[in-house]
Length: 357
Image (tube, rainbow, N blue to C red; front, side):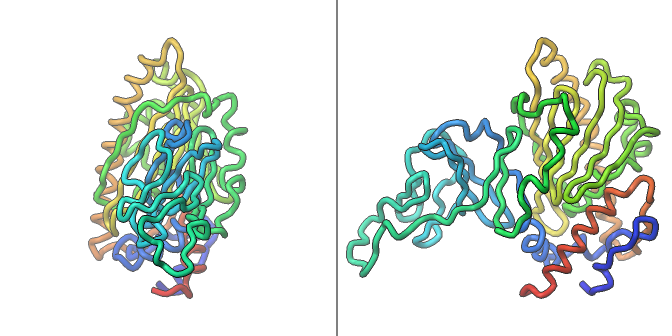
């Protein structure tokens, strides 16, 4: 990747990223180091970690991570890696454990990360269990969601997510409750899916049903330091969401918050390889007398929109992989969110230029 590719042009002069950023293990390895390892990653929702001993396993930038609620009520995050010989401390999500037991050799840690016992280590010179702790990771709880950051230089959480709660008021995300998860594995680079999310330019051509619910003429995009917002007044949606506004937040690098009256849908975009990604949808709803009817209608409608997005993203990946794509100009009116995201990527690539390959 050369320096010319990382230059930032004004929106009205900008081009999309070259095709090679969407293919190959070299680009993805760079992104794991420069993007995912240096950002806040959504890992869980608070309902999974409500009580002492509740724990969730995940992965951030190819690092296994473990979140656990301590006996003191504090939520902590650690690498899911024993300090002995890298065995896992947990293999799956769970409830109410009293300690962390390595599944390889049985070393045991408190929920606060302190080594408590190490079987048959009495002959190891100068070995003291009290000297060994799991290294803590940064963890943050926000509006019912739980995030982890690997790198100490990751910007403070409030710099990244600040202003969202105030903007969507009176919608209260913390009052919504998790209901279900849908997961899709898609044959495209993770950035293809993000690029697609970040613009309403394709709405009239790809999403006929969604276009009836959103007002394309009033569809607007706003840019902030680490996130962008697409919003539109709702129309023709009395059976789905009622009156109000649709808020589509993208938070760099791979979290989407689709917020509608009575519903929060979180999306995590996780790379599985250069040309594959996994989309994890978690649905949260307010609970009232109309909840069940709204939930059923929303599920069918969301499935329709997702099928349309999968089809177009996989087609775009084929185009990017064809060897026939030359980066095109971005539409200043409709693709400022794409421009913003790709400029954050360009800055991350440039900042990691001196890293080992």
